[in-house]
Length: 322
Image (tube, rainbow, N blue to C red; front, top):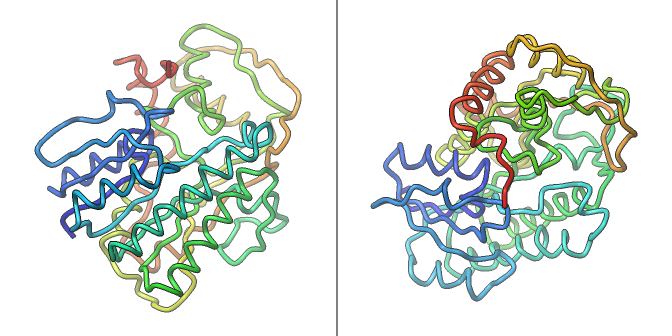
């Protein structure tokens, strides 16, 4: 594979994926409307090409496929990725996450692009009684966002059956690291870092006992590339894989670890629970580790330290998107 299209390639996860592809000397096409991504995350070069396009604009997307008819694979990261806005505007959420995904799939079918990586989310699981959560757990999303990501999964599977698109569906745990915006709900680490650096009172929704599986963004990027370039060792099965550490961390514990690394005291402000929030979530990653040459390399302590260091060095990590 030489030429890869990355939707959402100027975003948090997407920009790290683009960096990893460029390191492997791939030609990278970046499709992003910069609604949440940043042009500063895109380093123009001989092997990168940026297109300011919305995935809901099929004609705009098709221009990329027409200009570059030799695309080998698509990594689909562009999405509406917040639970709260999906509650307020479910139609907007569905338009981006479902209609936008279908646009990409249709163009892959038309231009005969074989390999497809679809970024899904642990939000499709909702609250589960049995932890860690495996890929065969019954889905039960608690927000329209989770519903739209799961609907996207089903479209991907349908196109795989109908048109022989070689797809991998990756359900991400809570991704964190440099370039994550404080304007995203999933960026609790980024938010805490900003609050601690500014001497503000960290805010905790609910009682702080809720748990998440926090995975460093570079480990996610490496998982995406493994799934893009490798064939699974067990062929013919369901193409869904959890991308996670398999470790459970409460929000209170997370804040405690951050403050210890930063050597800073804190007094949290406890706020009401948010609608659509999941109580406990961490994912079993054995299927991904078994089928591909991947494993998470970054401990939570090391990932937090790297994230804090980046914030202190550049300020970019916790700067809001205008």
